Length: 86
Image 1 (cartoon, rainbow, N blue to C red):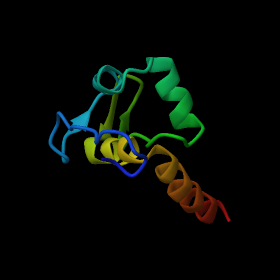
Image 2 (cartoon, helix red, strand yellow; image 1 turned 90 degrees about the horizontal axis):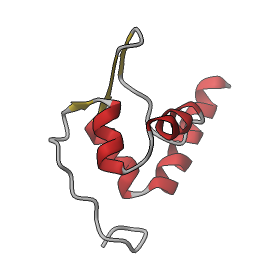
Image 3 (cartoon, rainbow, N blue to C red; image 1 turned 90 degrees about the vertical axis):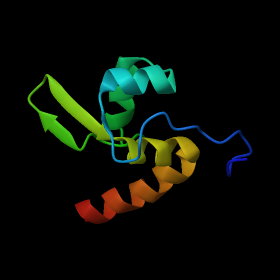
Image 4 (cartoon, helix red, strand yellow; image 1 turned 45 degrees about the vertical axis):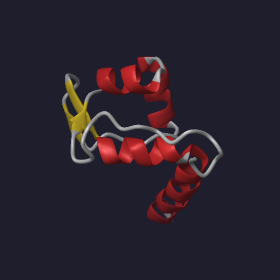
C-alpha cells in the first residue's frame, strides 16, 4: 500500500526515462490541458527539458514521486519554490 492508503503506482518506464506530455496523459489519465494547468500552478512536476514549443520532456522519476504521494509532493515543492522566490 502507498502512504495514502491506495495501491502503489506501477511504473511503466525506467526512472531515468524522459517522457512526453502524451505519454504522461496516457499513464496518469488526465487531459493535456489539465497537465499544463497543474504544472503552471506548481501542483505537478515541471518539465526538465523544454526546447521551443514542440519538444518538452519530464523525468519519469519526478512523475512517479508525484503519483506516489501527490499531496506530499505539492507540500515539499511549494516550500522549495517559496524559498527560491524569497
